[in-house]
Length: 495
Image 1: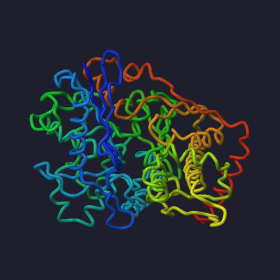
Image 2: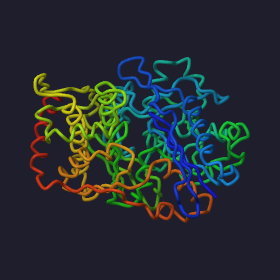
Image 3: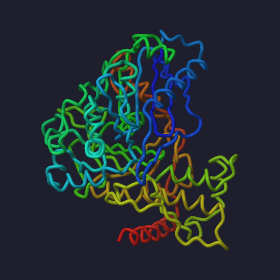
Image 4: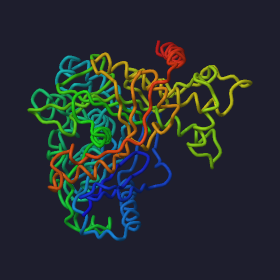
């Protein structure tokens, strides 16, 4: 018997097949092979067509089954979904998508969220929402009401991206407490949707989907969906969560003091606390974690850096030959010393940055010398610049009391880079464990709880393998010196 998990990213869709009894990862596939397009009609906008996610997911599923034809559809006992956070999908009464999804890195609603933060009062927002409304899903929905009023009147329900995928599978529109909290729509003091925020924005609470548990029965594949996927009708959907809480979960980061990180398109550090916590400056965010209970709080503190892996992929796409791999880039950059011979890159070129108080400073190359610097310097400076942005953000987590001694990361992102990982480990004086786990695999395993095959999330993820680790360099000073110069550059930009 098997479980299937999906990771609905903004770059691609991943699908994983896991054997229930042994927890063996049978296969993981990705579609499309190249990164999905993000439409930016105006500066700061970022949109994708939700139906395209579904089409790619169907293709990925068929690819997964074709490569493992010994697995029969009736042997798949549950489906789990992880998805890109903070996106907005709106549908009419017939479940038709009304507009492209306004996705996580879109910054058009910053002003709306900031105004609500001031009008409602910072104390009320931070104490009840644990966040400013900021540039999140509620503010994006308010933007639609203000700028597309005719379309707004047609909206029956709003959803997060994972809710949309589950709707395509089950024909039911549902969401979770975790999902509403990531959209900054959850009132932590009353443990219900944040009515005061909906009232302030003039949004109808009737648009909120029905709430279900993160791990639980969430509907079954319809005949239409099963045909499109190549699976059996009636297969249950039993888990959904945003990608970052899910990534932490699949690394067994579930209890207070445990910390996960990822370096995908965006960069994230995610730590767990057992009580509601917030940053007074609202530069990081707090969300319901996947194992949160009202009587046993588990809050995820999330530090997000939009300009992370996307900065490195931009370097690869535009400054390297087409056949050059990331492994080739790593080898090239190893020839350049720490500090990249004084070339510095500010990587914030993917919209407004929360850790910079929602400022959109753009990416910048500093001290570029045409006689001294070459391609290898650009690669090293980009990896270091992204790592430095992690450190700049982690300093905020330290201010909130998180003690960082060990970070667990997956084996499929920027942390595969020795330069990147060694820079972070050296600056934090901590260990980094690279674990053989991915979001789609974690979603598959989590699906096994509601099907009755695993007792809880800890059991579902037991037996994880550490495939690599990074320790601080013995000469931490060279990293500290390079970081301080970079930080000085950033602070000049922010003035």
